[in-house]
Image 1 (cartoon, helix red, strand yellow):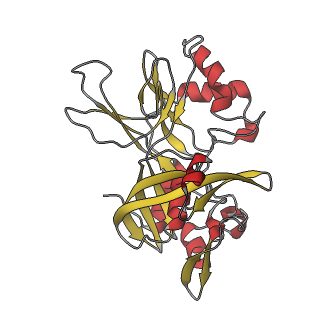
Image 2 (cartoon, helix red, strand yellow):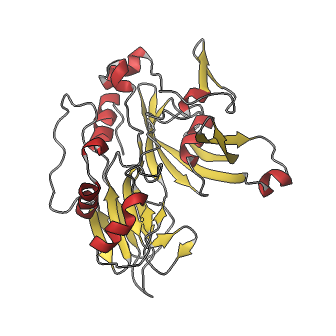
Length: 316
């Protein structure tokens, strides 16, 4: 479901829930797609005070991408307040601006770094906000071999050359699991195909850093804009194969000339391509008995919509 942009995801975040069920106190939750029953209360997530749709394609290659270098800490809090689309007590839903990372190094502007100020600004006082991630849509460079299925892999987190990277583990032992290896599972469904790319709907059924990006790499279809893990997919005579994860260093994603033409990008622009992984849909149970479940949809970032149009990937 993508040309996948994974490290900096935009999309629906709900403050108040964490993985594994409800928890008292606020938290930030990303859009999750889950089975639900009963009547749905459906909401389209948009920035407050703005109902305008994005216009026709322009010359800007990444419209709608947040420019953190031009933003102060106070400005980021204001942007997040403007992105709040629903608040019910400690449960707050916001459409995270694309380009804003959830976590990062100390001193960097991230969603996590301003949660205390955001909590105060929203009147939550000393209640701690939590971040939870969930399902998304992605544009992939390449088309999965099957239109739908599950991706299962044992993953571990390793610190390599100063960077935390996710590494697949073949045939893990009990000791491996005791030392931090985790069995992970995602469901995927190909929504549209074209120009050698696909729009893929992804549902993570477990939680692990960069799980969706790594799972798509294992399908030989890295997310568009994945400058961390896409280098693990090599090509010889048009055939794709996996390179050893431990020895393949992160590098800017390399796109072929035909794809660059379709995206109307130069190689230097492609090197700045944002991750095309968007947290799209969240199903929430009612907060009280007999309360109808709620379905929250986060609209695609303008640059994501632009590239879907360039690639001819039309959603059903």
